[in-house]
Length: 326
Image (cartoon, rainbow, N blue to C red; front, side, top):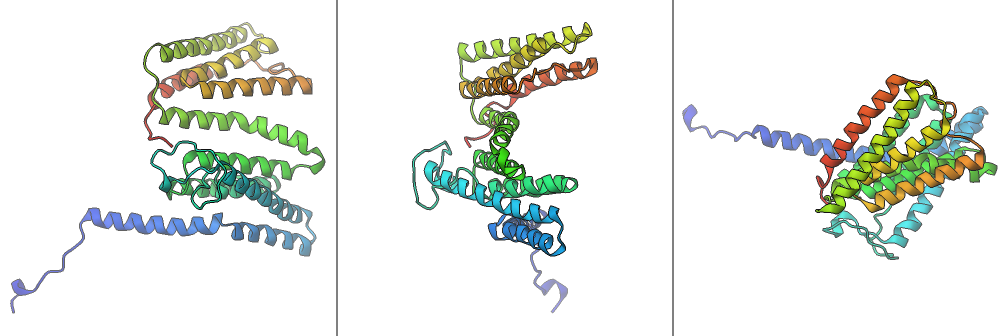
């Protein structure tokens, strides 16, 4: 038999090899996520910290373990209650992915919010409070778990976003003195609200195309004008060396926030932003604080803000409708 008669073993193409590597990598990451985000592992980490604290008589470990257990339980129970109260179908059970409300105990109708994201961020928030140097690592691990829920097709991005917010609120409240839970809850909600609304606005804008005709044009024009006036107020008072004027900076912040919301052409995003502005204003009045009262004069910072807002206006128009409905 000559060399030409020997059958050759077919070799995988580079594309097929790359596909195999990606599948193996995804499988490995899935296994890691299942370990990190599982309730048993999170409870085990908290229990281990509690045991270390009791044995070594170190209060920081004892409090971190006990409080993370309580935050985990609070976030998990709240998430489960909301899941079955809302009854949103998981991605594999719907083609549209829109919000669906209605109490249900059926399997697969429990997508909103993400329990894994809620539990992971609740534990991370508590541990980051007691071990601040490891905060970035804790939040990175929790973010990895949360994003994997979307990548695996188990949740929509809005499910994960809600779970993250729920977990952070639970962790923040539990990590603070229990007697001050009301003020802790208010601080957590008002502190997280801008970021959650901003993330929701980005998702909402990306999955909804702008309405045709004059409504979109009017909302964008009014919103862009509000942003421009708000930036102009800040630049004017900064150039005058009066960066400590509370009223002017408060008005500018309101104009910028509501203006950006209007440029999304979404009444839902705009309404949420207005409600947030009112809530922050009421909170400041109750605490006796004046926003911007001690604002230093920083011309470079104000110019940077103006450029960033201009880029934000362009980006908002560019991402409209680029993703399928989430």
